[in-house]
Length: 501
Image 1 (cartoon, rainbow, N blue to C red):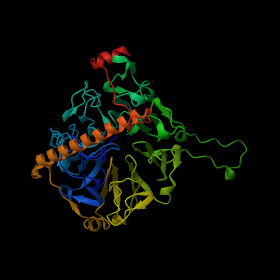
Image 2 (image 1 turned 180 degrees about the vertical axis):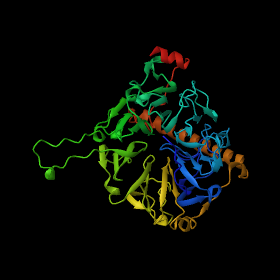
Image 3 (image 1 turned 180 degrees about the horizontal axis):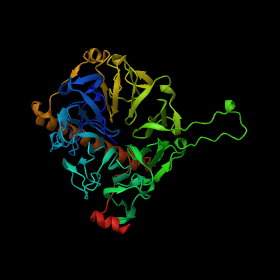
């Protein structure tokens, strides 16, 4: 388990960069005054120009990101409504900002994960820190409720080596290969054999929270090497490359050929195959045993999973386009045939791939620039497409967030000449925007007025319908993890809720 620092390069960025608008339907009370702004091509980031970066930390449902630098530093930027950046406040950041409270040259941060509203970081020695929303105990600090805007040490776990985070839950594995999870348990996302459901106040279904890291008993006999989380599911591999999945099963994202939720880790049989022995008397020349299928790399999109095998082939299952057909079990992804695939990352619907001397992206409409094709090119692509601006560069790492993407480009072999031609993104921070408070107040007033007029019009239409004696029927939306019901917990102490189950 000796840590070896990955190779370094310069990080570049594309996609949505109006953090209070990303993923939201227009201006809300959370709007920070920055108008919609989508970077259609990859840009360098002013604070990180010529700074060697080796790791990207992001998540499929995250509107914030972090990068780790060669000198042991950590920079973060993006949405910060709940203090997920760990900067001691809740103000969004538009430029990579040093997370000084995590700077420790003796034990630097080497990895982490981003959920939708919280963050995890682990250090070279395996210490785990968390920050952001703790509404459902996803920070693992032993309590739930109030947010934490500063990084907090999770003292009940040590030796962390890999981490994942989804919507209101967290999962890690330590250096001994044991897996721990905590947070909001709906749909079995924690893997403890239950979703912690009970009938609460007013006969409403509620869920008992796990507010501290709890070992997943189903996997104690395994040595887990990697963890990745989607919006509401988790995938892990052991040191041999065998795979397990659990959580919300919609659209086949667990890879078991159905849509069933799994409350405990379930073997993905496709990656547990055992080569058949040579039958007695069979000529060795004509015997071609099936080789073990194993993964050396895994990633989770919001509603899908990716894996890369030892032959650098990409495997996919789940869905990225809601109106498309789901892949119910693992299949080799034909769109990347012929490329030596190094790394893949996926958001809600867009994907990014690091291949040898190519950066490849794809995703259905709508997109927000995260595919990086440029102003004069297509905005979306349902098939894999190279980013022409970065052709013939060695792409070291990639990351895809909710509506933005990142990549680390090797400066060697001509890479520096390529990325030095890219534009530099240097937006003002919120404190530097003139009359920002007035801009926000005027926009919210206009929104309130528009909403009032709309409600008045709807009321008149409703009265017309009523006068004609017509009946209206209400239909509920499909229950999916991305737009599902608001999580419910009891009005009692969390430990009391757990005791009732």
